[in-house]
Amino acid sequence: MITAGATVPRTGSDQLADDAPAAGGGRPSGGTFASPVDHGFYRWTAIAAFTVVVVGFARTYYLRLLFGAPALPWLLHLHGALMTSWFALFFVQTSLIAAHRARLHKRLGILGGVLAGLIVVVATTVALHGAARELHRPTTGGPPPLQFMGFILIVLLVFAILVGAALLLRRRRDWHKRLMLLSCLSMTGPGLTRIPPQWFHAFAFLKTGGPTGLFGLDLVLVYACVAWDTWRYRRLHPAFVCGALLIVAYDLPFIWMFLSSATWTRIATWLVS
Image (cartoon, helix red, strand yellow):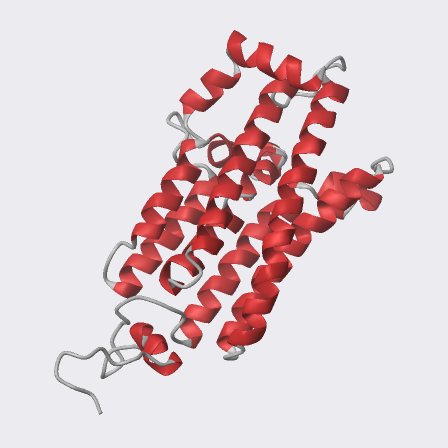
């Protein structure tokens, strides 16, 4: 018997209904994955982010045989495999939710946590070794090695924060799914910096992000997600506010000013020594 004022336990169907479209086909009010439109949005956004990564690393990893790139050490192969697995796992996870396979989704989530930890550790090692290797080589037109290493470490920090928060808030599905999506988008920066500007006529602007650094291609993807989600659910979700601000922060000019400073040069030199 349910008495007045008692709390009725919420079933899985009730929770999914949080995101269900309004009567008459209106937009949903917020929460979890609700319709094929939502499933497709998360999958295609992850594919778009992965495409940026593939294009950026095509010459040195994904299509290196076509470009005649030299053989890679095992550590770089491991790094590439882990990063590729992250995007593949996100695609699988969204597909499982779309198919109402929540139990398997949760089990794979444990694997995702382990994978994220491995990505941070291996990518940090790759960044340190790469900076040490390139430090005394002639410049190739990209960012100086120590600056680029610092940028990679900041990206990894943001990635770790987003994934960690998503795992801690896994029971709050509306936060969890958005933070996990942002974790994929946060990893497009390193790929973006490696895309030659001459490949696209207007790409120089999207690569640098303009004078303020706020319009880079990686941020355009974030903005598009925030705009679509806000329109879809009729409110700006705080998960996108917090996560997007973290991603935007590492593209702002003051970050590169710090990475160009004597303070960071001393720290980075000590790290690679």
